[in-house]
Image 1: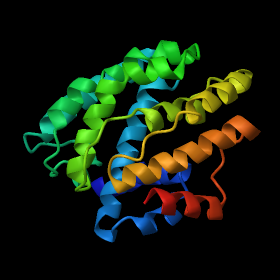
Image 2: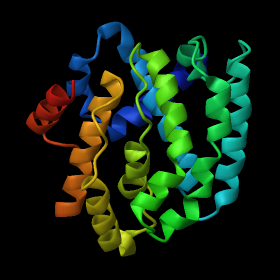
Image 3: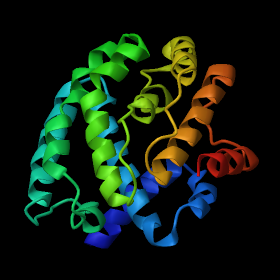
Image 4: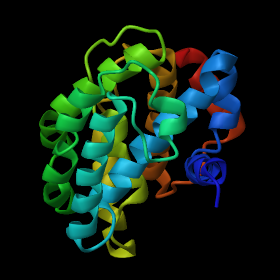
Length: 224
């Protein structure tokens, strides 16, 4: 399998979860679009590693591998296919590597459906590191980091089973009641707006399917 094929696999996995982006991306400058998709696919890989599955050990090891990978990116090295688009960007990769461990630290509180506000505070250093990278990647202002969309992945994708559906809806509603601020780069604002719509849909209907096209268009336009 070629490096290009591997890259497409990771991008297609993210696109499969966020089909709204086919609409939302019209508000992102065309040269930025491949980088945006690679970046959000990378963040998805990390939350999958940290929070999915019954056993935390494989995910913890994967996050450790990613810390080394990010440090390599700052030295001009890469192994992962997503690095083909991201590694050459002069983002603060070592600082992001140091902050990455925070994802694993909130795994058990999230599985117990602890307060989203507490998890948000615990992930603040990681969110700040993400914001600093996005300011470089997307030529914008970093603003204050916010783990809103990162935490949303817990309710949207990493619920244990149908037995937690009621708690997931309640938790999603609590998180959606305090959405992310409008600060940050345009891709971040758009992604956060789509995420907020998904969370509200989950809280109201118990549904994590894609937003209707008109809703996705409206939210993306306002965020942009």
